[in-house]
Length: 416
Ligand code: AMP
Image (cartoon, rainbow, N blue to C red; front, side, top):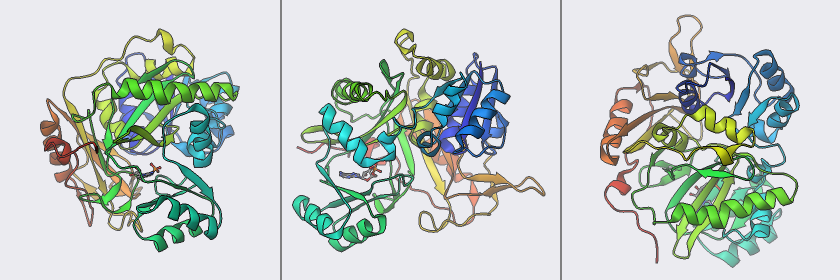
């Protein structure tokens, strides 16, 4: 099977490692890829959000399967354009990707499907925003309605800051605050059959102790030692299957990766958000533990044959990833700094590039790379991930020191 992987971040590097280690994958091409992905794939240039360009590249490279990593190409209809050429694509149609592309659309689907989630209002002016904020009270949750690369959400006790964010965004969803630890559950689906991956937890805030602004994600671990028994079955029954059924009923079946972001509240799991693709950096830890061949799994989802796929196999132990971010991230990341110590197994590239003159590795994004490691238990995986990160040198870089710490110390509790 020849696979074309679209994207060039940490998620795609993790996907590339999984695809490259699947014996059924005979060729792996990545576009645009990154210097880490270049170690395991042939790189091609493409504008990932240009459906016609990606479809043409899929034809040119004789791809049997196109795996689309990021949300923007999905929302732009890249999967549709690839399928129109008769090539299997892993990723939802542009219409189905609205589950991520519009928070209002996602809320509509959840309401119609009876999925447990936060109560919410869509607001476009300060008056209705103010009323919604006052109805729910602090902490206030204000979400940009459109794609915002994981940074469109403000959670704050400061009413003025909540209002200001709403005004900056234009159209927002204001919702009630969900109290409880968060879980990311990835579900591979062909629109009907659905296979959950291992639940993971990520760390959205920039600072230790969940302080500072939201980011694209600063680290992750899996599995979750504190997760309530039966959680995955409950979420599949109450969230995933009703959502997939509602999408089929609308004539826009969702096939690809359904990312369910949950808060485990006193009243049970509640959906915080849906994404239409693998989450970054949780993908790094989930795929590090997946033993079943990744190419075969994604191909089954892309071709409507997932019901016949064997049960997923997982490695024992745990995985941890720690993100190294550039100085100034998330507000104003500095790029162009030399990185050393990154050429070791377990270093996943997210925002890196090679200097044309001498091939030196340079930072090229806010989240630059991450150290991903497995271990016989969470403590061992955590130590190994931090050892990787400690070996990387990048001027002014920042990373959290508390990834997986609370889980390890038994300090994660479910309210109520
Ligand atoms: P989202 O982009 O919707 O995942 O939101 C980013 C982050 O904001 C989530 O991971 C949560 O930490 C936080 N968040 C979003 N919605 C809520 C909510 N209703 N209650 C509490 N925290 C939330």
